Length: 266
Ligand SMILES: [Zn+2]
Image (cartoon, rainbow, N blue to C red; front, side, top):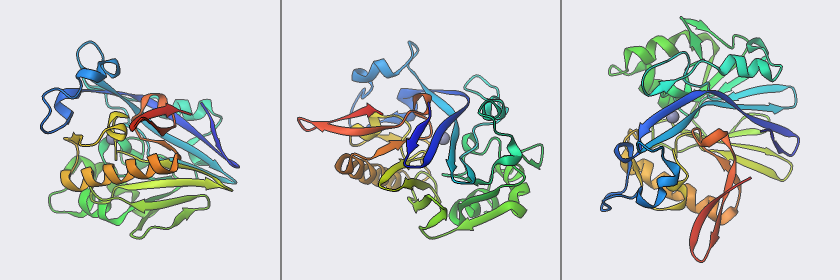
């Protein structure tokens, strides 16, 4: 579903789905079963399904991707592979992409950045916060799989380390926690805005309730603080937002009634 933000169009590009046992990956300290009242969000086995892919942002003459899916992975939890096909379905060939921006460099966001050592969007400038590039590629503890996937980007890469407009209509904001360089992006045109949260949250419950913790967070304390801050901001502003793994990449907003926050789809 295409969303219009002023003169900019945004569309989720589906690559595949991931599945994680909800009670193992998202929990609330001090609560025995915080999923009890959210079973409608889980499958019968208690799994939370993650949409995998990215967002295509069409802004003037720029064709931008926010994240690039999980890639050709196929295992019992993650299944990808449809990203380029679905991009072509929108009439867009990989070489037409002008910019790729990463919310962070976890494997399920960089899947189509390169394939077999070759840059997939070879006319694009790839942009990521320098703290994530250091952590995932340059650090002595960096995962060899991540290095293999990401190092071929070096000639196409521009790292950033301050909050700014990266591409006309798209600005970065550093929110360290989930990963050291985690970034949220604001797409804006005229008075319209939408916020792309990456993995600041994985499920809408983390936006509507305080206190969730995710096992994927590199810095759990920092990530929790960011989650709480962003949730408060979105509740106050009523602005459109989307996380990387929300169902069908749908945008929505937080509405509050009787002191309770709810996620309302756009
Ligand atoms: Zn993710």
